[in-house]
Length: 164
Ligand code: ZN
Image (cartoon, rainbow, N blue to C red):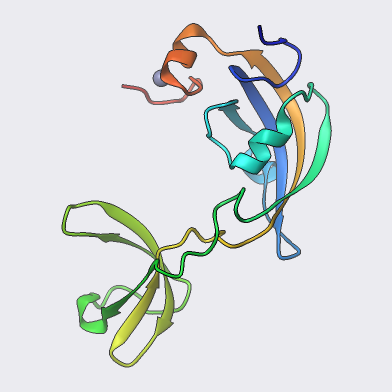
């Protein structure tokens, strides 16, 4: 049985965090609020989820997560050159612009403009944090056992969570 006073599978964890990448804080719960997730369901990056086991409310930790245990290594195959004329004139063709592209099957992919050439635009389909080492500073600010329904669904039921 899960101990109800520490982070274990099947517990709903509320986590305050800051995320530093390349020496810069790129995300922290002071801006967006703490995250809430069901431990053991892979809802956060694997290296962070693993480090949380056994922590109690009020415990803090700093940890470094490798790219492989974070958002994955950069995949050299996950780039595509697309002819410039396929972009409508409303799309700003600038490096770093994020676009949603649809393939023949109708699946939507997020991609970033990596390079803009005279005829071709190089799109990067990697996650923006792929290949990056992640430095997390975390504090467990809440902990409760998941409800039976949450366990069946594999996610947290929040107050404003739309659910079908
Ligand atoms: Zn649900």
